[in-house]
Structure formats: structure tokens, C-alpha cells
Amino acid sequence: MRAIIAGFKELTRYKSAMFGLFIIGLLVAISIYTVIAIPYSEAIRLWRGGEEIWREYPRNALPSWVNIFPGVNLPKTMILSTTEVEKQVQPLGGGTTNIRAVLTFDYSSNTFPKELALRFTATYQAKEPFVDVLWITPDGREFRLDTESISHEEWVLISQDTTLRRRLGNQPPEVGLFADPENPDRPLQGTYQLVLDGYVFEEGSDLDARLIIYGRVHGWAGTDDQRRDLMVALLWGTPIALAFGLFGALVTSVTSLIIAAVGVWYARWVDAAIQRITEVRMILPTLPILIMIGTFYSRSIWLMLGAIIVLSIFGSAIKTNRAMFLQMREAPYIEAARSYGASNLRIVFRYLIPKAIPLLIPSFVIMIPSLVFLEASLAFIGLGDPVLPTWGKVLQNASSGGALYKGYYYWVLEPAFLLMLTGVGFTAVGFALDRIFNPRLREI
Image 1 (cartoon, helix red, strand yellow):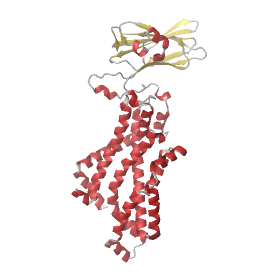
Image 2 (cartoon, helix red, strand yellow):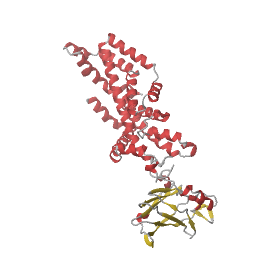
Image 3 (cartoon, helix red, strand yellow):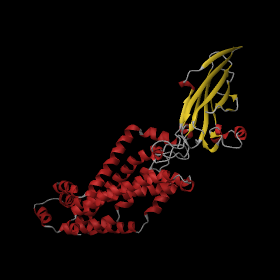
Image 4 (cartoon, helix red, strand yellow):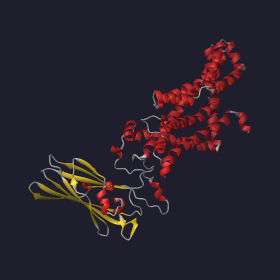
């Protein structure tokens, strides 16, 4: 134990190790924040909720930080509600009431918005309210949108209004309603108004609306083709990746070490059986076995982790550990332990395994990113957990959604960057530990 503590203290001599520890600490901090800020059940609900949850988010929006670059001024999503303005209510007689609301907003971007939509919510008993919508541009031009009856909750997708599109000269409504008459390729900046004239036909009826002007940027990570905020998957992918890698590496390393020590000490048929199992396992391909499990049984990430652990226990590490224990078995302190009557299990767990732990630590640390990448690879080929949001799942969705083909590079680069960052952090620490606990490497 003292050797291990001294070895970790020696890490401060290596700048690469300190950089790696900083990355690992950052990933751990993100993981702790994530499980507190976004509970597990909430993360699942958000990621699997579809457009019912994310409907007011833009589709395929870039991260908001792209606006920091010179000359970039992409619009953010704006949501205006009649509940936030004063409505004018005027009885017209015969049970009919006019409800007027004016939504005013300033548009300063030099790029057109992505989409336009109205979300109506109405309160009534039997007679549906009727609404008339007028769009007023900064230069005073007026465009009347289609009038219609409104149910209790209804979405009006202005961007898909073919009648309005024809009136705008076959321009998409999100372009035609914002275009500058003198320069149709650019939006007219200034103050816009949306005037809603609603008519209700029953006492106690009411009508509200939300105008959603979908932007081209959103949040720190952007959105995907299902309007989901990618930050949810990027954040939750961190604790899942660390848990997958840490638990898998720990169980695999410790179990392989114990099996190798037991085989070396008991020798004979015990060692022979362990070696034969290891040799058979080493010729079996891991990935095809995992593909079969995911295809014919379950794609649960924890089942996959269990299968990976079982397949990795009897791997090449058994051979490496066996060679190390064969040398230790002949050491004088082992002979001394046998001479005073120490039991076989005491020798294995008190004298053999503790001596090997310092040499095990570097390989354990380096194994973590390999397992993280393996989980991402399984998710990328469609064998990821269908429930959990992970980095690999984001990459798989980006591939199926044609992210690179359509130019949504952020969708691929963000999870790929986090995967590489994890690999760099653990590998830098692992290589430094290897040089510390393996004296022969210090001379290289």
C-alpha cells in the first residue's frame, strides 16, 4: 500500500499525468453534476419523449457558441406568449367576445429563422373559438395568415402553409415574412408584430397563443433531427461512459489477477484447466459474440457490460499475470510464509496478489478508455442500449440522420471530442503510472 501511495505522489513529476488527472477530474465533476441536475428517470423521459417534449426546440440547430465568431449572427429561438402581454377583451353581443393580443419582438439577425409556428390553447365547452392572425413587418407591410377554428390545443405550422407560400411568391413563409423588399436575400431587421384577433362564443371561454420563431442556434450543444437538445446525451453520456469503463476494467483486472494467482499457486490440473480455458477464449472473437447477444437477446448496456467482463476475464491478461506470479512463487518471502505454516489462500491473497497490484494499476487505468470506446462502437453499429442517451448513441443517430452529408458537423464532433478526451486523460495517467511502477521503463 505504501508503494502505491508513493507511486501516486510521484505522478506530480509528470506533466502529462497531471493533465490527464485534470481531464479525469473534469469528467467526474460533470458526472456528479449530471446525476444531480438531471435525474436518471428525467434523462430517459427527455431522450425518449420525441417531439411532444421538444416541439418548441429548433430542428438541427447549431450550438449557440458559434455566434462568438466574427461575422456570425445566427438567430436564436424566440417564444412569445399572449399570457405575457395584456389582452384586450371586447364583448360583441350575442355571447361573442373578441380577444385581441399583440405580440411584439425585435429581429436583429442577418439570417432568416428556421421555422415559424403558432401553438394555440383554448378554453370552451362546445363552440370552438375562431382566430384571425395578422403579421406586420417593421416597414408597415401586412400579411394575413389563414383564419381557422381552434380546438383545445392546436399547432399551426406557419412554415408549412402552402396558401401563404403562394401569396409570398413561392417563398417559404419563414423567408417571405422576414425578407427585405430591397434585398430579398436578407431579413429586414427591426420590430415585428403579430396581431391575434380571437373570437369566443361562450361565457368563460378564453384563447391563448404562443409564437415560436425557431432559431438556427440553440444551447451549448445544438439539437438533432428530432429537436432534442444534444446536451442531455452529452452530459449523461459522461457518467455512463465512466461507470461502464471503471466497473468493467476493475472487475476484469481484479478477477483475472485472482484467477492467475490461484492457478500458479495450486498448479497441476487447476493451472492446466485455467490455461486451456484462456486459450479457447483467446481464439473466440469478442465483437461477433457481442453482436449475437445484442441481435438475438438484449441490447441492454449492463448486459453487454457483463458479457464483456466474462469474455475479458479469460484473456491475455491471464497469461501476463501468470508469468509474473511464476517468478513471485519462488521468492524468499513466499518460502518463509510456507515454512511458518501459512495456508494456501493466505499466501495467495496476502503475499502474491498484493505484490502484483502496483503492476496491475497501469493496465487497469489504460483499459478504461478501451471499454468506453467499445461501448461507443457497439452503439454506433446499432447495438447500443435503446433507452440510455450515450455518446455512441449520439454518433449512431448522427450517422443515420446524415449529419456529415447535410453539414451538421457539430452532431458528430461533440461526442467524438468527448470520447477522445476520455481516452487522452486515462491513457496519459496510465502511461505515467506504468513508468512509475515498472522501473525498467524509467530508463527508456
